[in-house]
Amino acid sequence: MKFHYICDRLPKAIIINKYCNMVSYKELGLVNTREMFAKAVKGGYAIPAFNFNNMEQLQAIIKACAETKSPVILQVSKGARNYANQTLLRYMAEGAVAYAKELGWKRPQIVLHLDHGDSYEVCKSCVQTGFSSVMIDGSALPYDENVALTKKVVRYAHRYGVTVEAELGVLAGVEDEVAAEESHYTKPEEVIDFVTKTGCDSLAISIGTSHGAYKFKPEQCTRDPKTGKLVPPPLAFDVLKQIEKKLPGFPIVLHGSSSVPQEYVDIINTHGGKLPDAVGIPEEQLRKAAKSAVCKINIDSDSRLAMTAAVRKVFVDKPGEFDPRKYLGPARDEMEKLYKHKIVNVLGSNGKAK
Ligand code: G3H
Ligand code: 13P
Ligand code: ZN
Image (tube, rainbow, N blue to C red; front, top):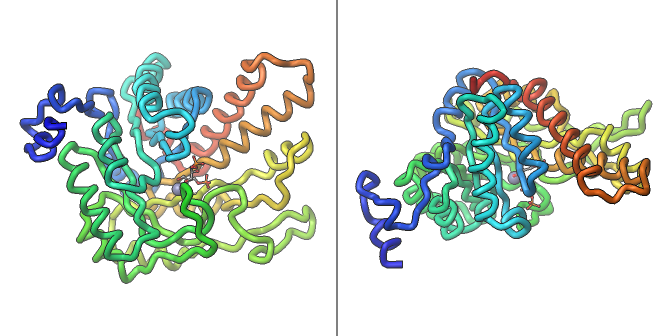
């Protein structure tokens, strides 16, 4: 306790991690987002930010990234910390660096990131235990409180070289237990003031994306007459453009960017599942965003759908199967395929971490 107090006040150069009970992300072979984002903004591509909660997801992410030589952000949400334990996930990320090297990826570029941190304390605990990046999500707070909280987290995290993502604007749907009925687009007129006052390294914005597999209500969409599937409305690229103009070259983040592949939805629905009218963000819109200042694209639901589709298929096709490796194995393969597809065909991050 006493040492934590002292550590918080010491300049970076004289912090002795051992006495402070701290693990630096650098010791784990991880990197922060600074250089990664600068290259992505310049190069017109986006870094994949994949959530993970278990070994199969992590294996699939690392295999896909090692094979395509893509930098990657491994995201840990509050739900993941509750499900799998923050310490265990941190050790898994450390293991992921070693696994990536074993797969022949000489210089893996892996970030361990806290997704939707909701307090200064949780961000601090992640910084102290080896995360290389944290998000402080004050988007549900009044503007001035969001600024104050973000600034406090930035001041602490930067002392240890950890980068900070902040959020302005509200996404519809559930954000780690913060539920919003309506989305509120980020106000371009606020972004310069927010970024200047807080010193954050990247900014998550709201331009029409949302979390989960139901991103739009049927009444917000049109229907494809041939397939009967919902066709979602376009993202607010005009708002993105205005933000880019206000903050030239500043890293922008898109949450809620799963595209909800209809082939997975169909497999789930024809194998005992029930996901009527699930709809996501069309990939061509994400491709367009990746070419702009959007340099981090968050994908979680698509991996859940890939996993669920593969598991349901095994259960229906092989009802006698009860070895978890026989259904989690195909699920892992399907996720790896999905991650590679996102990297190569949507975000364009392949070959950027050779
Ligand atoms: O922010 C949303 C992510 O998909 C995390 O979701 O809280 O259920 O893990 P979760
Ligand atoms: P999806 O639910 O669209 O995958 O979004 C994930 C996300 O934004 C995690 O923070
Ligand atoms: Zn999110």
